[in-house]
Image (cartoon, rainbow, N blue to C red; front, side, top):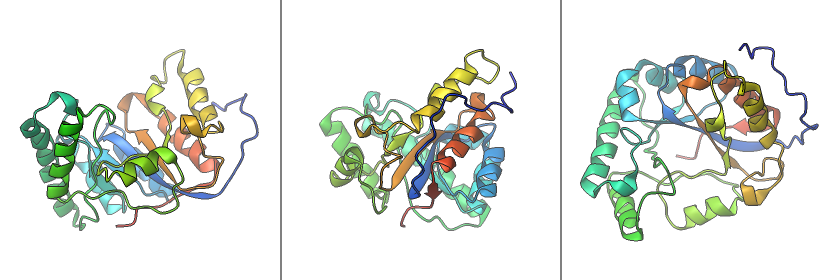
Length: 248
């Protein structure tokens, strides 16, 4: 199904509030990462790409391209495991293998690493308080740092920040993970729902793009979504978001 001419017909006239935002992208590097890097560059949008080590090993070139374009590579574990089901040894093997690969790609790109950023896969499901605390301690020992950004008002994000969580949390989930392949009969409706959510004004549901305050947006570099991905970014830009990198 060709979505190139798709335009949402049922969205209300959105509120546009110019505000600072940070774009974070999970599960890279996909088969489409290179074209997505180029697309973001054409829009002047930097990003933090939270990368899986196994995907980086298979597709290093678009990650190098992202580094050369000024974006950041973050660590998203080796193969997106449930950390609640891993021993600490297994968990940090996931972290360390991915980090060694990121360091190698930084050297190949000729770019100094700006910051050591980490995000857990399946963020809320990292195990018991004792296990979670041990994971945080290990991340700190490895030089990972908390997200430094000014102007966030999201209570959920501030709660994570105040707890000292080194895993980079977010304020707005685009829910692009709900998209299906562009050839699916459900594709237009799914894309419409993702775009319509941007106009929703419900802080309890982490939908506050219409309110003041810096946003940390999460998207996903999933290969099956194709060009729908760019339409989600365009939707975010239409909301007046001005993307920047974190304080390092």
